[in-house]
Image (cartoon, rainbow over all chains, first blue to last red; front, side, top):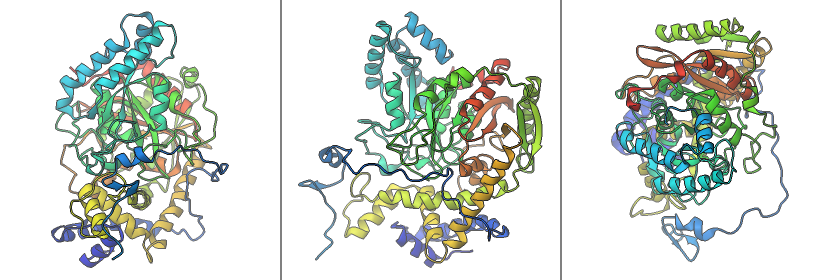
Amino acid sequence: MSLTRSDVDKIAHLARLAIPDEAKDRLAADLSNILALMEQMDAVDTAAVVPMAHPLNMVQRLRDDVPTEPDQRARFQAIAPQTEDGLYLVPKVIE
Amino acid sequence: MHHQTIAALAAGLRRGDFSSVELTRHFLARIERLDPGLNAFITVTAETALASAEQADALLRRGEGGPLTGIPIAHKDIFCTDGVRTSCGSRMLDNFVAPYDATVVERLAAAGVVMLGKTNMDEFAMGSSNETSFYGPVRNPWDLSKVPGGSSGGSAAAVAARLCPAATATDTGGSIRQPAALCGVTGIKPTYGRVSRWGMIAFASSLDQAGIMARSAADTAPLLQAVAGFDPKDSTSAEEPVPDYAAKLNADLKGLRIGLPKEYFGEGLAPDVAASIQEALRVYEGLGAIVCEISLPNSPLSVPVYYVVAPAECSSNLARFDGVRYGHRCSNPKDLEDLYKRSRAEGFGAEVQRRIMIGTYVLSAGYYDAYYLKAQKIRHLIADDFRRAFQEVDVIMGPTSPTTAFPLGSKVDDPVAMYLNDIYTIATNLAGLPGMSIPVAQAGGLPVGLQIVGNYFEEGRLLNVAHRLQQVTTWHLEAPFASE
């Protein structure tokens, strides 16, 4: 599977990464090489195999629906790039 | 003091031969003198280290504390530390100070250890050479022109150079065992779920596991003891009892069945590495173990499977770094999308971006079945290989890495060549099994690691098997020139 510049654009948009134009050809080649490595998997017949999502056969634990964390908003927001009145600020979304 | 075992240091502290403050100052002075040449540390926490050493001394004076009270260690910079920067080797988190401690950090602090600082690592633990760190590569203490391995290269180099007696580390595809091998130290990656991942920055959540690096299995045991065990804050934490690792260390190896996967001794394995492994196996035979050949037929597929599963999970985990709540934000974003895209492009390095891109692609509509689902199926076959093998043998042994440490810069432009370094370590993570690497006879003046893989939750047996070898050999005692 060989990726083109337009594939790179599409994936970069999904991944929310701004890839500079001059890096796209190299990235397309690198990603194509990695995908070529993955083609080894095609030789294996897995029709009857159950996918393994997790190394241990564990079920998700449930806990009581009670608060476990104290309010630390001020501490958490102290490391944010931009906040105001307890809210995270981003560029205007709604005109 | 820096050549002594942790047990000897603990005894010295208890007898009052030296204080924890003196011991801490000793290691801080070594870091100050030797680390500029190695770059093993991202952050040195001298002030808080001395404060916790004083607290440890107060406990020791009252005859209180345990086997780790007052022992200095370092944490890989992937573990969140309250009030101390946790960068994960990335520009994205260069300004990130976590508001809480990881469970691993909390448990070791409760056991009385003194944190000397945070060690260098590949960015977000993605790399096998420590060259993807935003803070520059770590140098191998045995040869400064060589890589220390990765991603826990800072922890491995720091322990090897005697800058700390032990360090925490993490392993997603070999990131404890491979650098331990390349730097000549002892490293253990426990069973998936054995050690809490809470507060450990996520890379690939179905593979990530925290572990320990030290100079010997005997030094590793008390540290693993302190961190292992159920943690309700980690949804994948195993509710299995933790055995007393020190109590099992000396168990006899007579009749131990060691399996050698024939796939681990084929093409690609450097002949001098193979010779060192064979020499160690002869020692095991001398200790009464029985060595036999086994097969892990699907193991050659572990590299392609891993490089689907790990990037897929990484692309999802790293979506949280969006420039909004913490971490790097680009300047003057023109809209929200620009904020996301430029913050991430500026904050992440090339390898992290490659993996996010691959992961996004294999999870995207139309490709999911061909890549991700296929990989998850083969992952099952790889785990089944081990299940069958452990019906016949007690432990599996082989090389940790196909070669000794390679030159800095030699593979950094070829991602696929870099990925193939993990060929012997990855299958263990895919199956979720515990694995260790211990130093054996060197090849060409560089360390070689013997990998020991055990069945689920058999960390005690791994430490025992490693310890018995270390009792009758001196390979683990050799120190690199950069420690002088």
